[in-house]
Amino acid sequence: MNTTVFVEDFKKTTTKIRLNIPTVYKKNATVELLKSSVLIAVSGALRVYIACLLLQTQPSIITCIAGGLIIYSVYTLDRSLDSEEDVINRKELSGSKKEIGIAASVITFLIGSYVLAKEGMLAVAFLPLIIGYLYSKGIKIGKFTFRLKGGLGIKNVVVGITWGIFIAWLACNTCKSVISIVLVFILYGIKTGINSVIDDFKDVNGDALTGLKTLPVTLGERNTHRLLTSLHIITHLILGIALILKLIAYEPLVLLSSFICGLICIQRYTKEDYTSIQKVGSTFFKDGESTITIILRGIAGTFFV
Image 1 (spheres, rainbow, N blue to C red):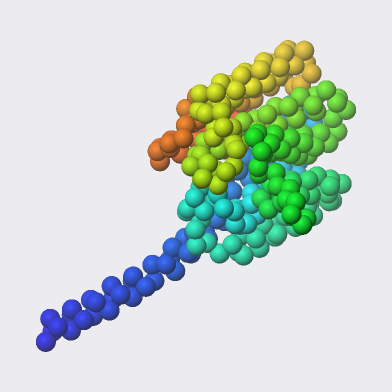
Image 2 (cartoon, rainbow, N blue to C red; image 1 turned 180 degrees about the vertical axis):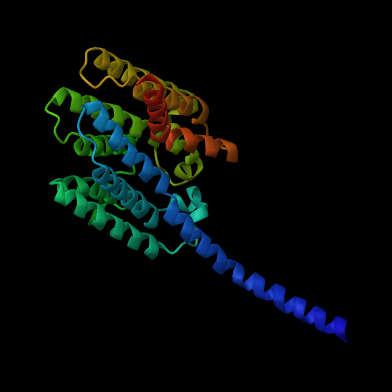
């Protein structure tokens, strides 16, 4: 009798667990949605700080944080708005409560834009939001649809220009040198554009199936790899010359860290197939580059001041 009762209880328990698995998965997927843009936001905030150093302007921690909140808002909104290719490319977000992601996006945008409004830079808060919406959903007028996510390389150019302007704008507070501002725009514009192409390598299967003409899909792995390497080297060569000519602040560690981390990403992570370890490495060198730069600069300051 006791054995029979035990078996029945065991069956009920396993059935209950099986029925609750979808709920648990959805909760985890929602958490994954909310945290998926955190590292990008932190990296963006630190990039604003580093841009201030290059322009020799007084870094405002509050402005940097506000910039990070805007970046979080835009990326979370993109991941909360369903798109055909994301069903394949971002399976870990399947079952997440998109309305929670949208709510988080709205809240962080309001906080970030409020801070930037007090700094007299409200307009810059709306730039990535508008571009982000055009990128994710686009505008449909009758049979005509305008969406920045299509077109060979257009997405990467738009991403680079948008975040290049955003970072340079937030950092140029008291800078009077237009050339210096343009140089910072070039650095972070091309860097974020390159990073967006590196991200495209992870999404090759989904992009190909849904007809998105990304650079890795159209040009192939080798040609895209060569293009990114050339852009990376030329950009840092220009910035190196600018540093020597004192067009930007003398921050050799910033450029050295940017060059090495970027080169590692291009050399090792421009591949279609990613292992779990490679994903961690890509995140470390791509999204963690700004953190590495700040740490190296702090260590150098301790020993050489």
